[in-house]
Length: 283
Image 1 (cartoon, rainbow, N blue to C red):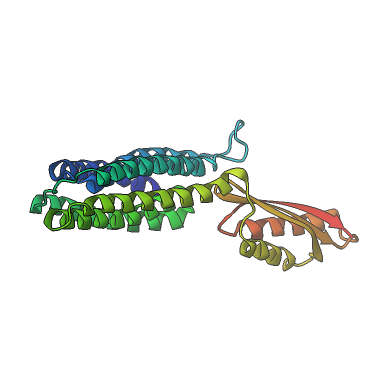
Image 2 (image 1 turned 30 degrees about the vertical axis):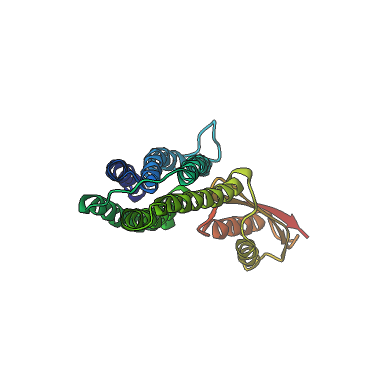
């Protein structure tokens, strides 16, 4: 099993266990913030299952029905994750506001509840490290999203724990405030994740830095006099490039073809470029 797939399996199992831990802590303490955190872990479990499928699907070889591979599977899943995150954030924001408007009740806090939340924090730190490492190695947006989500979960659980502790010892309404903060934070992350993956899905152009790098590599190949066209866009999480190179019209067909193959090879050596299409214009 690849590193990426091991991380996604770890993500699924870990979030399922953390959901049960946080659900227990939330029900015993009566904390809306902790229950919101538990719901977030439950969604993370669903997300993990979807991510596992996406990582597996996106690395399939091209076939007759998908001649450029299955790279769009991962950003599609990540975008779906962003929608679920936004829905969850809205529901708990609404619950916290209604509770804040009513008469709050003191929350229960004991060492069992604290221990469950501390375990959740440590587990998410580990997951963030492993998913981040796998995401950078495979250039997987779904795994990078998992790493970012794990880091956010650490902050979310810390916020829930703080809100519960203050609510149980001093200000009853602090738990609702923590729940509101958690909801806003989840919604912001959903917005950022959704915006990023829309670019992957609609075929947006890559960064200007990558486009400059593409031009630089193409023009430094021996025999290339210039470029008449450079276009690049995302196909899923990878970049496809179209380049028209200008060569000496007195070169033989085989020599021109060799130059084009060299440009194609050099461009496809870039980490984010999956395929380069090179046309020759003799001048």
